[in-house]
Image 1 (spheres, rainbow, N blue to C red):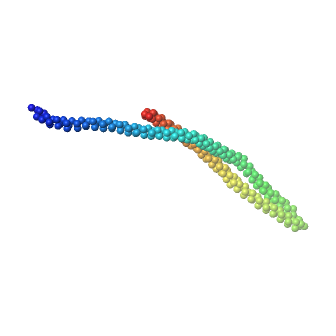
Image 2 (image 1 turned 180 degrees about the vertical axis):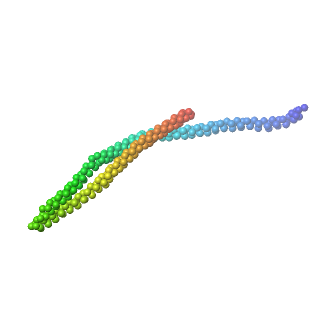
Length: 251
């Protein structure tokens, strides 16, 4: 005989009425909870996606503004580049003209001015020497003339005194002229030549600096233009990516 057969009917009935309802209530509650969870999760996901879309749209608008600004900056940069290129070109031309003027001044001095001015000084010196020589000859003639003249003693002394003074002044003037000529030939002319050569060297340096400025400006302007193009290209690519990402998302 089995155990089930040993249990009285009343015991079986008690077990059926007590256990069956509680057991049946468990699946129903679990089913209700499972139905509510997906709904809550779906609502949270939708809010998150909406927020993400809003963020992407905001980023897209920002990139569009940045692109517009970058294009304007590129245009203003191109204008600045023209201004700077014109300025350095003008500076180079001015330096070139200045160098040509300094070289011409040096060539003129070496080729004509120095020899002419030296000759002018030599003529002045020779004139002084000639006056001194004439004064000496005149004094000699006066001495010879009045040497045996005993009746014009006073006149003789006056004439000879005047002749000697003229000779003295002529000799002193000649000595000054000789010193001036030596100073002019040995110091003044060489100093002027050195100054002219220094001006040429300075002008050459300024012209070289102007050439470097032109080269530097070309490199810097080319670099700035390249950076502007790269920035615009990057922004355009980012805008395309953001638009594609927004297009793939549901509205």
